[in-house]
Length: 214
Image (cartoon, rainbow, N blue to C red; front, side, top):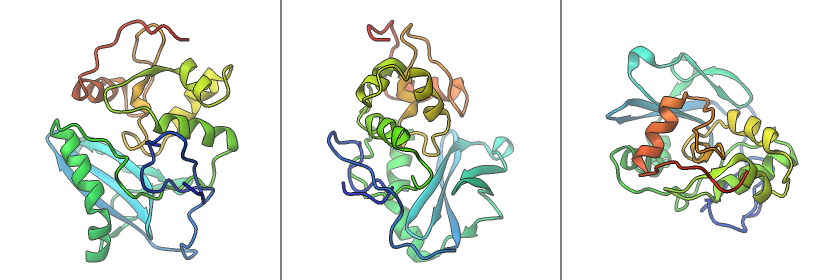
């Protein structure tokens, strides 16, 4: 997954050699945040947007377990009542993402590189952008270690800091932090819980073994 940049991740984010934009250009200040739901056998997921910029993604959960808030635009915002209901044009904008997510959770091999998405990276440092760009290139059904991701990002000694970037990822699955595991073959941490990390890897047919790289 991983083009010319305003801290957004346009078109095919997961392809190698692409760069990340430093901001969500062209969006009027104070744009109203809105949300779109999608349904899977695991429950309902939520996408939060501001204008045409995707601000966050919350993985599916049954209604009784759905968290009340999720990070959006650098602050806590409700993915429910505090976000406006989507309008028809907004649902059309979100439709390709929704369809891809629903296909993924139905067990269909789905990569998100074909989507033309703009993501909000306005608060990220250069180091964090390097890590996110390297992460975006980890394709469906593949895993790598935190150390290997550090090397691919150009910061070979920063594997602990790479783990911190993964923990703050507001776009789980779309930016595939679940594909980064410990070199021992153990799952490692995941912001949505290790049960979710295992579930996503199971959907992709990944069976972990000790990795050769750090």
